[in-house]
Length: 251
Image (cartoon, rainbow, N blue to C red; front, side, top):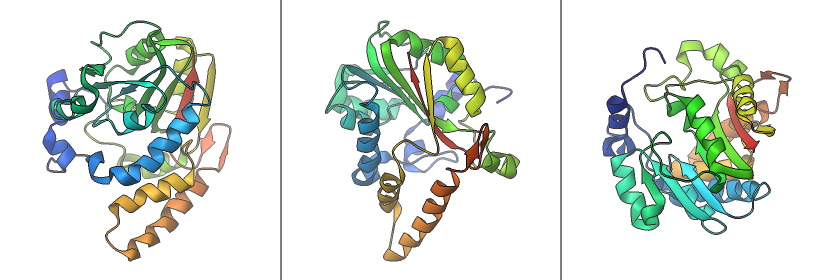
């Protein structure tokens, strides 16, 4: 985004109204659909454990700690959260393991984490290059960084252009699979794997979607979800049909 918002403007985005859907720019409160979101969180942790099965686990932008709850079965959970409101809630469960701030002002030690996740987070950062270097420093050798964001070079994003829904006030940085992979390699990560559209598969996504259903008729939306998931498998080289991607990077 150019020009960039000031830091105080960015922080003020993430008030209680942001999570309650009362702001012009808002998101969901994960606690409202926790039962359904757990299908995704648990399956994601299962995949992550194939890369690093124990140790300290950091979720950057941990919100209310849903992913950390699933991670806590196998790891020691830590989080970073910029929102005053979300921080006040997540610390009720995870206490001093949550840093109130950002990757730019954290107090964690080098080589401390086995896993770092940034799920739909890196696009919210004004300096993603610095964030990636911090994650590299915080990870132990063989540790894994998990990033979920949009691939802006995919056909979906290109076709929709300025109407693509990923263009929103809180998204300050945008990526392609190519330039994000290049950044990770230049930072020092030795193994990069990209999952299209997500690493946890179709079934958890379908089960999670039930959290927003109001009637049995809403199951018709599964057809759209299934269609999107199958389109995401159509790719060749740098070409991808849809923009969803998850990158695993090993130090």
